[in-house]
Each structure stands twice: as structure tokens, then as C-alpha cells.
Length: 162
Image 1 (cartoon, one colour):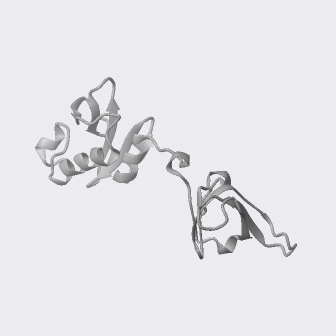
Image 2 (image 1 turned 60 degrees about the vertical axis):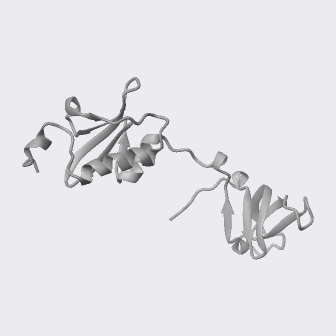
Image 3 (image 1 turned 180 degrees about the vertical axis):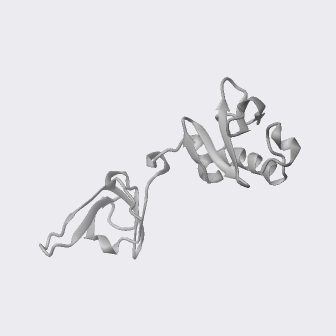
């Protein structure tokens, strides 16, 4: 798996001697002309020489940390889709449960997240969760209903729609 990190967003670096708070993290060719890739950053942690420049081969980096404020932000719908193993199309979460296609969307106004069988929005169930609620709470409420057999829509009451 290839991860894309913006070096300028790296806030801390784990080296063999522990975590270092980094400012100005960058990578480039080794100063020794051996073709290796090196890193460098200004170390802001107390304990060493504050403000000292640390540099070395990137292979010596054990881990990096990116402050939450710099991490890519996902929409609430994307987070719910991830939890339900679904996908987002036009701000609607599409997912499957027990071979039944379902969709979950944030209803206009303040009605909250709504769940329906795919294509049957007229018989949707509205949850009391809105755009400021945690995605995990929304996904848990939906899965709780589905796992107990409480499916939305008229066809759910017949019990023989699978």
C-alpha cells in the first residue's frame, strides 16, 4: 500500500531514541553522494539541543505523526460508509446488509439521517442523528436495527422479500 504524506505536515518523527517534534521536515539526496535518501528537520523537543537540525537516512525513521488538524478530513457520510462497508454517491451512503441494498442519507432540514431500501425512500426510517453527531453513533444505530431484523420499508413487514 502506498501512503501519500506531505512532508511539510509531519509534526513528529520516531527515531531509535524516541519521538522528536519536527519543524520543517524534508527529504532529499544524501550529502555524501551515495544515492541514499535522507531526511532533515529542526528538533523542537526539550532534552536535546533545542532547535538543532537532525538529519539521517530515511530508513532510520520508525514512524511519523501528522497533527489531527493537518490530517485529511472525511465527511460524515464517508465515515459512515467506511463503518458500514459501503460507498458514498452524491452524499448518500449505499451499502448491503443480508443481500439487501440500502441507502442512508441526511434528510433536508433537521430531520436527520434516513435509512431506506434502495429505491424506496418513501418508506424511509428517520433517525434522530444529524450532521453534528458522531458517524459511529449513526452507524451503530442503523446496524443495531438491521441485526435485530428491524428493516425499513413496507416490504420488511412481509418477511419474504429476500
